[in-house]
Amino acid sequence: MAMIHTPLSQGAAPGARARAMLSGRCLPVKPAKFGAFRPQMVVKASAEEKNLFQKAAAGLAAAGVAAALSLAPVDVAMAGEFDVINTSVPKGGLVDDAGVLSKASQSAVLKAVKSIEESTGYKLEVVTVRKLVFESDPFAFADQVIENWFPTVEEGDKVGVLVVTTTSKEGALVGGPSFMKAMPDDVIEGIVSDNIPIFTEQEKYNEAVLSSVKRVEAALLGKPDIAGPTRAEKAKGGNFKTREETKASRNKFAGVVIGLLVIATAVPMIQYYGYVGK
Figure (spheres, rainbow, N blue to C red):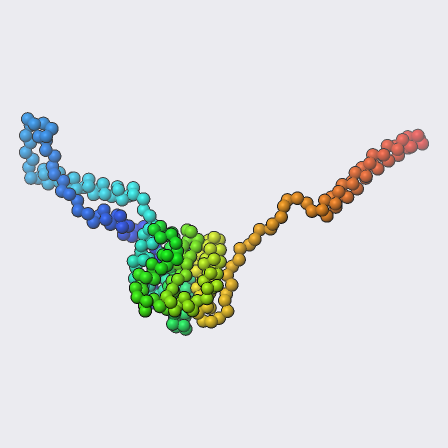
């Protein structure tokens, strides 16, 4: 059964910083020496009182750690970035760490990836992340992914990695020597310049991933390229009228003025002759 890695939920294990805090040893809390404040007063605490005091101090320490974890800013993107790099190679070929793909899209991607491997022998890994923090360049991040998942040239020779970042709305497509040789440059350019940015700008993340995978599949199968989307260009031009529009408006205005003049002259004359005739 294909495995799909999904993003960490709110109840998941804390991040690296939190794990570092939790993994440290708490120093034993020593009971306060009352003699330091009142030299003349000697207080001998019983073993039971000391035990209760130590339990209370431990509880306060645990509450302090919990408060620090709750107040510290949690960088979800950072966790996702490290999780993708350090995770094992996905069996199904998809890591939807950004959590933007629907069930239908996930199934379609897995089906396409499987078809690519069975038909061509090339393997495509698809990765979605929300944001890249430490390595903002998606191509550099994709290189890190393929280097960690396939350490040797032989392992990653026929492997490609498609990365889509939802926050920056960009992506990358990298691969081993054989994979890159089989992929035309114009197809790679079209994917990272058209399919991914245009669809992600429209918040259509499913289309961004699916259209890119289908374009890779067509290229590896030797089929004609599937053209990517195009940006709708806004109509250019000034807000001034053309010569023809100005002439038409002028003629219309002249006709209205002449009509008003005729009415203003004829109506009084008609009224006058009517009055004289009576």
